[in-house]
Image (cartoon, rainbow, N blue to C red; front, side):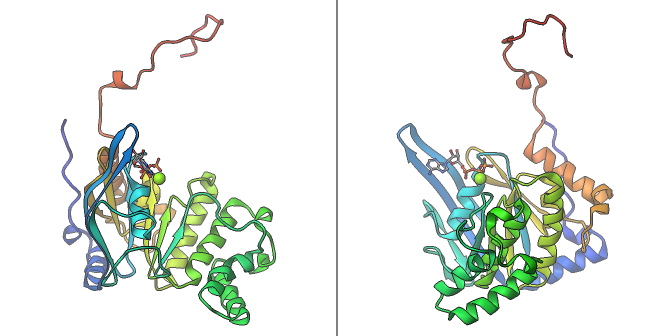
Length: 299
Ligand SMILES: Nc1ncnc2c1ncn2[C@@H]1O[C@H](COP(=O)(O)OP(=O)(O)OP(=O)(O)O)[C@@H](O)[C@H]1O
Ligand SMILES: [Mg+2]
C-alpha cells in the first residue's frame, strides 16, 4: 500500500501556527500517559483493547483522539478518568498518578447523563454540594457556569424540557463546575444532528477560551477533530495503538470557512488515509441475498 508522507511538523507551518505550537509546548505537561495497555479477559478469550499508548498533553491544550469503532477510545478515556485500571503503564495528571476517579477530571459522555428529576440548576449544583459547598455557594457558582454555557433562562427547566444540544451544554457546565484540570469528553456530540453538532463545536471552543481546563475529546468525526484540536491522536485498531500524532496546521480562531482551506483539506486527507486505508473494492461487497420480488435493478 502506498502511503502519503506525514504532514509537515509545526516548524514548517505558517508563522502563526508555528508560534502557537511553540507557546503550547512551553507550557507544563498536564497529562502524561506512558505505556498504557489494557487487556480484557472474557469467556471468549482475552481482548487487547490498548497497547503501549504514550502521549503528553500540555496545559490548556485541546487534544482530540480519533479512531474507528472498537479501537479503544472509550477504554482509554475511562482509564484516564480512573474508571478502569490499566493492565500496564501509568497515567500522571499534574505530577500525580491517577488511581481512581477524582475532582481534577470532569467527564462528559455521549448519552445524556443529567439527573432527570433535577432542574438544570440542581444538576449543576449536585457536584458542588458533594464537594462540601453550602447550598448558597453552590447555587451562586452553578449560576455562573450555567451562564457560561448560555442557559441562564433555563436554570429552572428539567432535562426533558431541553433539546439534545442544551442537555450537553448543561453536562459541560456540570463537569466544569468542579473546576477540573482536564475535561474528558467521549463523543459528547455523537447523538446530535449535524447542525446542532456544528453549533456545539463552536460553543465548546468559546467555553474553552474562558476556562482553565485542558481538553481531551474523543470522536470518530474527522472534521470535528480538525476543527477543534491543537493535536489529533490517531489510533489504529486491534490492538489500539497510536498510529500518528498530528499537529493541526489550521490557524485559530477557527471558523467554518476554514473547512475548505488547503491546510484543512491536507489534514483531512492525511487523517482519512490513516483511518480508512484503501482496500480492495471487493472487501465492501455484501453477500448477494435478495429479499425483493421486483425485478428492476435500482442501481
Ligand atoms: N468491559 C469490557 N470487556 C471486554 N471487552 C471490552 C470491554 N470494554 C471494551 N472492550 C473491548 O475493547 C475494544 C475497544 O472498545 P472501546 O469501547 O474502547 O472502543 P471505542 O473505540 O470506544 O469504540 P466506539 O467508537 O464504537 O465507541 C473492543 O474490542 C471492545 O469489545
Ligand atoms: Mg467508544
